[in-house]
Image (cartoon, rainbow, N blue to C red):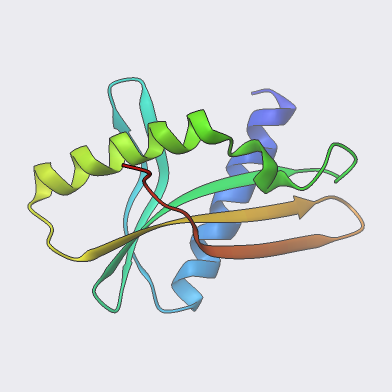
Length: 120
């Protein structure tokens, strides 16, 4: 396993634990629609949260959430639409980002709720 994959997996686990502590029910992890993937799908207060987790060892290349560019957002929105249709959900939905910086000196987690939305 590459170091980048290990950092990403550790970040997703931290995000999952954080969401559970905040009262979310985790419905899916690494849910796939074709070649597209949603890191975490969670439910809280009748709202589905489609969560992209970005983890870095430092902020030397900027904050992790900056990696969720417009194309990545479009892909997640497309996959989320498929998930909603396949499962017949009628809940509100939103798109969150959990940004994590984790290294030997610190672990910093930021939950950006409703970080972006579909631009129809």
